[in-house]
Length: 514
Image 1 (cartoon, rainbow, N blue to C red):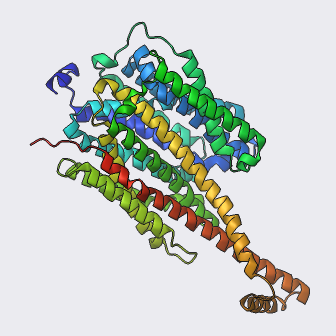
Image 2: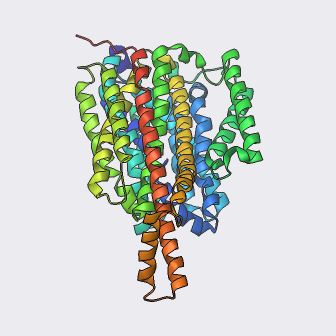
Image 3: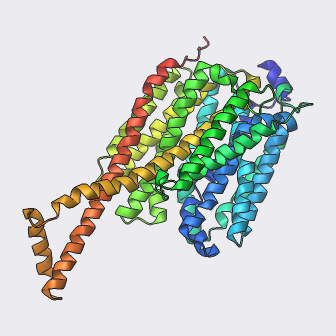
């Protein structure tokens, strides 16, 4: 460790964390902050809500392409130079997003922002892990984990408040001071070890780059648009899925066989890395799905506005903050695998509690499971990142972080796609099941219809009163069908957290120093 500190001009490793956390916060925040502002942007650009979704999709595609190439870019430019370039590009493109006056300019700006942001998280994660010995990484990842857990929770709240009190361009302009600060701190505090410096004679895997681009772009489009297009009942979804599958398989095969590949897939031979990454993929899917489903439930069925529904997610931040303190205190005292197991169990329990909600709930019924969810997420996410990288060599850290974050992004895309399908198809299924009970042979239905019709007869004729009563009962049925679909989705993701717990026992623990 002494040699590492000397190479860094005796920079305190905790001080060197500042630029990595600022850059990571900026990137993760932008994954969710724009969601609540989409209707406002659609109105500004005179496009439909469906067309405005490309503002999100283009960002995800662009960042997904860059993430697995972080190792290659670090060899070509040097990791510190690549990180500074990424921060600069992300900051400039954020300003372009705010100044956009057309849909075409916005999508172009978001693509540039994705290209800049894709390299931030893998670089920041690898730099942070390298700054500390394995025994000290738990405390560092507790602080870093708080950033990557809190940012997507804060995003909808901050985005809703800015949109309602200022205007939507400011959700991008707030990146400017953060980006400038992160750039200056990176210049002053980050130093490249020899293996992360610029290398000569690095060859470019053009075939791998092409296959990766087509694979990720087509996969993201399928996952984003599949539910609205009725999935495989749409021919273009079938064709695009086939293209994604073929190019995806071809990409991974080419990376195994090519000695000058974009990514080094040999890290998957490491058992800790492999199983730790699988757990993180599922957790990322559950995280992004839960961030999408709960605000939808509150807005669609409980009458909350965008800001109120975003604010309801804040108790998760309280839970995550408590988890950070626990992880920082206990990471060196107990087996980190135990923390992950407890965290996953809490996430599963919180999801199951959310699966018992009804339409007569109080705010406390949302706050308590959210606190448990944030606590579980922090306890599980922070140690599992440390465990998955515990046996990875420092010179492989950047490549491993890039691959891991790529797969986590794909997991998040699958999670949001699954939850959209569960809600739309589940609502239809429960509507079909419930409507069987709305006929003249069911006494509770006829009694309720008669009571409602009698109430309306004071103002309208009997025929219209009966129609109005039927309409009101049908609206209640639709509300209950949608509620049951939300319950099914909450429970599905709760079970997903519990199912992956056995994988933790396949991961080796970190040896403690005396």
